[in-house]
Length: 445
Image (tube, rainbow, N blue to C red; front, side):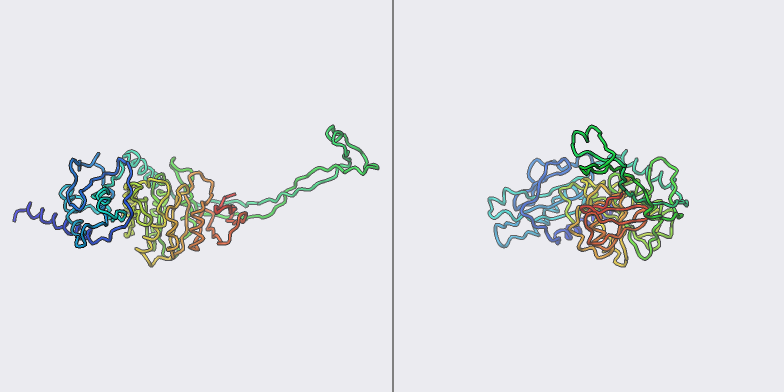
């Protein structure tokens, strides 16, 4: 049998298997599929109740961009009760395969089927969109990716462990007291403003003049101590908060580290990798997940709980872990600011149900887009908040996650446990730092 024939048969077999799987997929029911004018979205309409594309369509992919997702969209309205929608969907998938058969073998493409329910008449149904919507990944600037990887390499090369001595620290309480000067103040405002003072109270019972003295008395003395610290010899980092937090808080039990690798997180991601490289034992009972909020998919197709872009690493090899991190970073940078933190946590727990605790490495600047899913998290979540400005504040989303899951906030100074009954003005001391609670945020004093 000719080799070319065999290759075609194998390729067709994989297409058949994929399409069989797709037509069994439960459709997502919506009133009408959303539309947006975007250069990264291609609309390829088909005729109503037909598997043929409309005329004059261009099936070329601009700029050789990668495919993020493909949606098959149709209406629920039927002309006759005996109409077989799955059979039509199958024909439509095969029609698309004539244009791009390689998509059916690409495991990075997300396929979805949408059933529109808005149309109640044939006339209305014919006006709605039917066919395929193709979502493209924006082309990442290769120089930006290279710079991110250079940051990782620099941190891995230049971080080592050392011991740091912290001296005693005295916290002072300011005491104010008022002392009489021996002079007396006039009752008349004009004389008071002129600075007139008297040596006695007189028959008018003048008020005694006082002056304020400020005195500081020690309120609390924190004994000095020695602590492990990271030492960085490069020029790309100002702080090692993530590295030092991991270094000073041993991960006892079965943990999973779930880290945001979007946007400008490379300085913090590098610290995670450096810690794992310098402390191989940390991989023995720890699993790893890295998320980028959707693999660069357009915001229109990101849905709560299924945004995607979560990369897990099952092999306790630093080389494999390093490659997984870079793959996740290269695949997407998050797009919009809010990220899919809770989705990443839930996927990690589902993959490794035996873990005791989740350690989330989170971006201080990025809100959590899927807080509605927090109620499904049944494991404690500890959080290291990556601060770009070094102010040490804990945003309200991360405070809420730590409170709800009975986890905490891990800082270089120690673990912060946050009671659920916190009120404005309440504070938590963590070694030399005090955190004041206000409107859901913990502000570092």
